[in-house]
Length: 502
Image 1 (cartoon, rainbow, N blue to C red):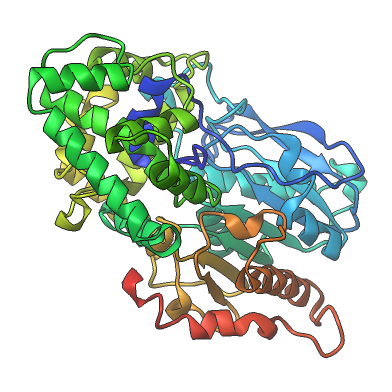
Image 2: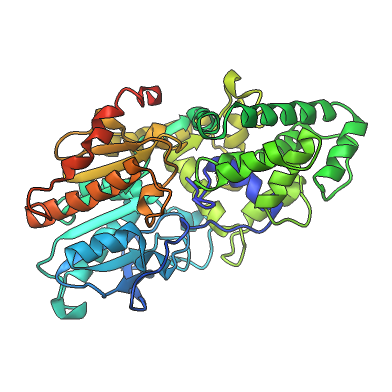
């Protein structure tokens, strides 16, 4: 899923590029508190981790912060983005490393950022892209960090902790499950573990978040604006007005069905961001309810321009397709292309339409073929729905989806996170593998540094993570008489509240 940050999920794959050159983004870095400068390192890992006779390798990038380095290891897993040093300078991974007296590492996923097995993203190259290969890269990385070849064997006897959020949170859970002999304890924040072809629940959660934190007036303004947009799309005069209001690059008298869908997807992109970045909801609803523009359509435009830098809006499908067909890493869409490949072959996660979305998100495609067409046009001419279903089935067969939960894993989810439906909720937790569901928390919010306006439930969940890590590494609670169960009301009390996830 994307974190456009967050990388934004499949829905934004078509939104982002028409607006501007917009690379995949890692979660917003926390406030830097470290006293040291992290060092960039490279490790040559196997291209094909599952064929011993294939000796080809490529350089995998990682950052290392040794501020607290004893013998333990904390690995912050990078997802579908280019890593920067910021996530080794603060935030919950940094706090975990401090508490465990551990070296803090931040790894980059194959085919993303500067970790490039090939100098292109041709289909022949992408055959070596999968979550299984990426997990095996991490296994090789752990072997290296615990060997005499790194820091003279300083970490040889230490415990290994992995953490991650979003897709990287999924990987953290799957690392503990797949390599329990290498990973002692894991923390997964907002990590979906159930692959699913169609995913209408994504938008359902966003509507819920707007209603609970933005209010009915905010939702009403969205519905009013969308209705006016649809009315204007019905005739040439209206389309001309929309072209002017939204600064569409090419003058249009009519729109094709595809151009209408792409236009509406771009228009609703700030609303999708609401569940992914906690500060966006207040901004979005302020613009929509308190803005100076008299007409709801203009307020939607004001919101779009407030969150996106774009000289004009390009709806030319040939241009859009050209961005994603470019196989050079110099392309600003290279990482988007790589993530699309993973959704086509492993995860699905295609946001589709249901009737309850109509007043607010008329942009969501009703049929899967809208998405499958991109898999065909970018990668496989014979791609069909059965192929993505088989990929999703294999992913769930290998990892168990929501039916299996490894021990020594702690997970956190937020009720305003649109990916939470595919992540464990309170009903999946048990003593050795608790799940904390935080009311009104958004995507990856617990992983970030603490802020004054954080809820008590969010603070409790962060403390629970720290306590859980300490207990599993040292076999004791960090303070006499204190245990991670201080936060368990979040785990138990929210069980009923999150049943809407199932």
